[in-house]
Length: 376
Image (tube, helix red, strand yellow):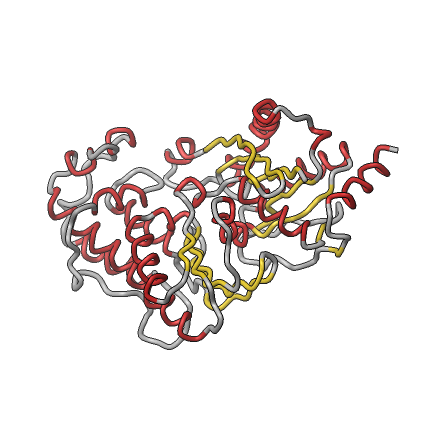
């Protein structure tokens, strides 16, 4: 079964092909440089860029994979959560392609797709505990199968990724700044007393990083010499240039290391708490953009090892928004016997993505029968 994935949730435009559970090809266009000028994503610009790039990327993808649009059995599209305008561009493209070719349509929860992304590299072992750490969400799930997710803990205000971006902005680092904070912290012993752990003195599994963000802001407001005087170019910050460009490199590195440690330790405490409450787990899945952070990856790998669980953490390229994870999640849903019709709706951030799919015969031949009727 050949499945096309379409990803336009935020500022990454992506299309990818997965065949019978294996990654085939991907074409991706990032808008990071466009939005960096504004210090964050501008929704209207994002949706226009998706509209401009999707046809170009789709043609490139077909050429890479040496297939035609008619070869595609199903189209999986990110339906939310995300920026509504951006989601609608991808949804319209997916529906148009299904109408033109007779391919099946399946809507994918963007958050669940992140958690299933490690399955593109290794077999996921269910039941699993899933930690999703991104710019807009920090959630804990119990995952009983590729289509069964139960939310255990969620973001109450600022997600971990949002805290990274805001702290980076306070330091006058380019957007998105999380990667540079990670780079600045390498090889530095954190000060455990410098910043508080966020929202851990309770018995729940929810997250709130607003307190940590505020603590860093107050610390930096008393030390105006620490932020970069002028925002450095992204290229100049790579390959160890971040500290070389800093006026007070040692002090800045300590701040970065202590902040990274506070985030990773907060995540560790909540995950440990969840593991103590959920029975029968076989693996720990960590996904989302912040899962690319070296401190988070190390902490979660250690937790998994201590509990005798498989650590499923995708390579950094699969942590960020990508179409391969959408195609993979859609293929798994189709194989489980689910699909959508053309009445499928996009779901913006702030609303739960409904489980409103329809049951079908779970095999590729059923998809082919639908296509045959469409062509006739």
